[in-house]
Image (cartoon, rainbow over all chains, first blue to last red; front, side):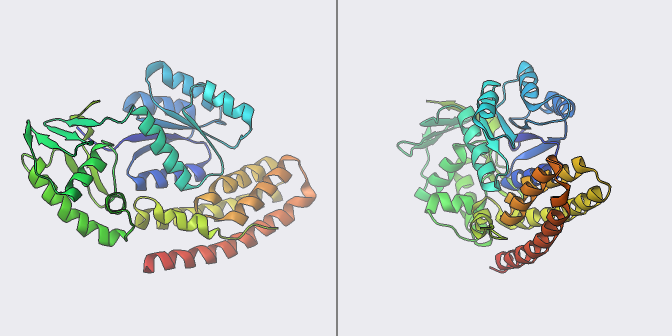
Length: 235
Length: 120
């Protein structure tokens, strides 16, 4: 079973909650939301999200207590959301176990950047050699092997593979991939056919059955994702 | 000095996010629908002299305008929330009127900006 990384959004203000969900879903995360702490605890117990965004000022149990309760049963990164931007509250939030602290109002760009940063930190130090099931990608030398046999990838294919393999489980749009591997932005409608060709060629080389890819998954209409269930990082 | 109705830098930054073709229209659509509802909510709450509801509606607007670059609306919502919290009744009616007028102007700019984006 594979899928995008999941985020639990706990925010009692419906308007803000909806906008946060839209931004994160469009980015490629699976999102569940709750307006109060009790509902959030139920969802977390059932679905074990990869990250939680917690509003501090919730009705009943506040975000700080919710963070403690969540951490009793699972280790997951937490970002606090709050209108309280003074130093005392930020320190309190971080001491309560928060990995980051977002002061409202914030933009989607800041939200997505903070989420990505916390996800990266939670994933641990970046590996120089990444083992992905039967694949081994040496990011330093650019050598890629399948079952111990070296594969002959083009520079573009290697960059695409590295970009996806560095963050397994995270959806990356075609536009983002082009920006990362070529260093410039083109419209999504141009990026999609371009990446489709490169990814197809890449799959021919890295997948045992290219028509039923196990490593690089297409997230229909959104982009591509490395299947994190076959990931095994080694430094 | 009042903030711009639409902070173009903030709005244009949305294009740099993953999947902007899906994200931006959805953000604008949710924003326009919900903001209008909250302004109506603030007006009704004020007529009922329910200042807690006025503050809550303004709080919702304040936290959400930044998602689409609605800078002036965010600022005016902040001032309205403060006035409601302090029970400054004399400020509230004008505050809600200002917010509604700003929302109308912001909507025009947002829809025009969205059209530019989708036509590009």
